[in-house]
Structure formats: structure tokens, C-alpha cells
Image 1: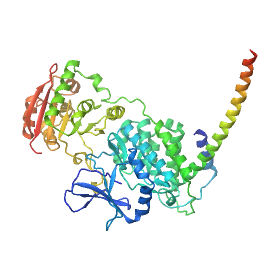
Image 2 (image 1 turned 90 degrees about the horizontal axis):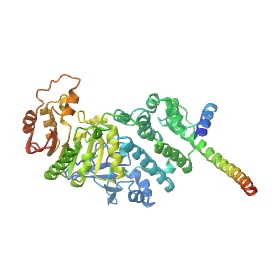
Image 3 (image 1 turned 180 degrees about the vertical axis):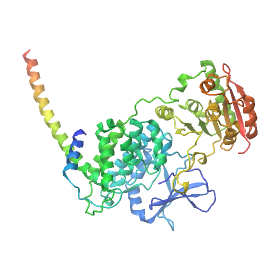
Image 4 (image 1 turned 120 degrees about the vertical axis):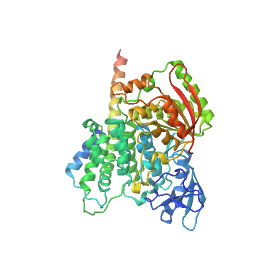
Length: 71
Length: 468
């Protein structure tokens, strides 16, 4: 969640959204657009991170097993 | 948009439109022969049939998320369908709910939205007024709240959800449990900029609150006067799901800091001996039984101990107290023990919830939302008479106009609880005697029974109103 917030701050700082309409919900609408983008990217990063983590864990547990075997 | 089961006003055969049912063009509520109905307007036909035929409405009813209803007419000259929802005898409003009541209503709203999305539909409004406590659980009462996803570019109720639920919940969790009452002064939800100004900085350490409240408020403010018109890119159902899930995770994690309130530990701080307290419990049950009441308002209920004590003797008990922590404790106990016939309610008897909204007719005053068979007023009269200087006559007349029977406890001036009230103020209450109490109440009630509580100086009365 924290990195989503960081991404949104960056998004807000860099972009001037070019979305539509003229009712009091415009701000809510645009925020949803940004949140959706951030959450989608976040989900991909999370998946990627889990993969890295599982590969690392496999490597680590493999080497730990090796140490154990040596004892 | 409105409560589907307000106390019946019209018992005439001619339909009478429910005043508060004016916001949503999809349909309207009306009273006929003492029952409330919902007519579905032609402009909502496609959406209604989609929700019906996809099994969305049926599934939500089956899981207790939506108020049960029957289709009494598939089509009339005016409506494409005529619904008769389950009739509710008492309506409560979000500004009368404690923290966990509002939180459960928020969770329900998000779950309904998430449930609708796979059906190609969404919840088009997220008004807290569309939720009622039914059988002890929050339940959506507006059967026309679903709309087709294809008609929207984003979740149209996102701003409303944040104003009606997230902002008051955050304020209650981070600032004060009593701030749910802001919904009383802001009938379409707490303005986000106000919530942002009131919340402490540490609230922004929670990323969800920062995004959905702080950033949201800034975006609303930034685009409030916008005159730009650009094509919108619709959000996918998956994106809407992700946003709703992030809100759900945030709401579920919100919990108030422990806050000491005036009545939060009342029963741990009482002057009753164990024997006197059990004598009081026994007498209260006997008097309630003698009244033969089916509907009860327990006023000054604290954490609802006596409401729960008599729950098997009545069909519905509205358990009213002014303390948000005591009401929350009452709700959590009822929820934990699956008690379905108690409605814990936050209200001040010294200033009952007023009528609100347009022409003061959208949300009814507490006193206009029913006349219970019985009012239970235990350990209350000294707070009204001494803390609020109310003459006994005023109290008696008010109660006699509100209920058929009354079980009331008289607490004499010598009682330590009364002495505590008088500790730092001049005793100007010469009339505060049991004799004057009886005299004043005899004018408005017939006194049927007086029972002394053994082991204490207090007494319990059963009375019958002369005006109802």
C-alpha cells in the first residue's frame, strides 16, 4: 500500500490528468482512474516480487539443507 | 434511497408517497393500507430485470445482505414492477449508530458492490441511509441500488462511500467516538475537506486513509470548478474490484483507540450490592411481563444489560443510550451472541434526534418513529431531573405521550449516585422526593404497581399512560 501511495504522489506531481466532466464527482472520478492504474501496476509488482522471493527462498533453503547435510 | 419500513402513517386505501423517496428516479416508495411498497419506474426496467434475472437480488437476500421482498405485481399501469419489501417496525439512522454499527454497514456496502461486479452490475449509490439493522445485522433496504457497469466509467458511489462511511469512521477511530454525529449536520456525508482538517497527522501514516480521504479531498477541491471536458476512459470491472477491495481492507482494519467515556464502565461502578442487583433484575422481568409489551424502548440503556435480560419477553427492543462506547459495547455483545431483536441506538433523551433534511421531512425525529408498548427507564430519572433540571411533570408528560406502559426506577436523593450528581453543585431540588415523583407521574399515568428493591433505597414502578 505504501508504494502505491508513493507512486500516486509521483503521478500527481508529473501529470495533469485530461479527463472529463463537470460535476462535483470529477475529483472522485479522476482519483479512481489513478488508483486503478496504481493498483494494477501494484498487483504486477507484487506478483513479480513474490516470484523473486520464492526463488530466493528456494536458493536459501537449498543451501541451508546443504549445511544441514554436512553436519 | 429511503427506509423501506417506516412506521405506517397511511392506513388509507389510496397510495401516499413516502416524502423522502424523491432522489432516485429509478422508483418510488409509497404507503398503502398501512404497508410500504416500492414501485419500479420504466426508466429502470432493464437494470431491474438484469439484477433479478442474473440472480443477484435473490442471492443477496438469501445471504442476508438485502431486505427480503416479494414482487406483488409484475407490471402495473405506472410501474414495471411493484415490490413489497419486508416491513420494518423501527428505522434507525446512521447518526444514531455506534462505531461498529457504521463499520458493519460500510463493509456490507462494499460487499454488495463486489458481489454485483461479476454480474456486470455495480452499486450505484453508497448511502448509509440505505442500510438498516435487520435482525441484528446491517442490511441494504434499497432494491433499486444496482446499475449496469456498462453505464458507468467508474464507481459512481465512490465519493459518497467516502463521505458516508470512511470519513466518519476515520474520525471516530482517530479523534472521538462521538463524531459519527457529524452525519446529522451533514446529511449527505461528512465533507472530505472537513474530515481532513479534523484528522490528526498520524492518520495519514495509514496509506489507505491518505489515498481515499486526503488525496481524494484534494482532488475534489482541485476539480470542483473545472470546466474541462475530455473523453473518459471507463474502468474495467477488475479495476473497480481492486478499488473496492482496497477500501474493504482499509475499513476492516479501522478500530477506535480505547476512549474513556462517561458511561463506558457504568455497571462496574454502581452502588448496588450483588443481591440488590439480582433483585432489581427479577423485578424488572416481572414488571415487563405484567405489561404484556411486545415492543420496548429501553432509554438510558447503557450497555444494554437490561435489554438483553428481557429479550425473550418482547419482539423488538430499541436500546437507547447517549454514550457511544456503551452503545458500541451493546451492539458487539448482541452481535457476538446472535441476539436479533435488540437495536442499540445512540441518542440523547434530553435532546432526542430531531427531524432532518428538506422541509425537515426526509429523516424523522426519534419520537415520531414509533410508540412502543413499553418504555423502560432504569436509573435515569435522577439524570433527567437533577443533571438537566427537568421538572418531574415534564418527564411524565413526555413519557406518557410516547408509550402505553412505563417501568421506571425512582432513585432517592440519599442514593450515592444522586449524591455524586450533587457533589459540586447547590442542591436546588427540594421537589426531588418520591412523593413529588408519584404526584407528578399520577397526573399522566395510572400507577399500577410499586416494588421496593431489597438491599437498596430505590423502587420500581409499573405505570400505564392515560393518553395512549
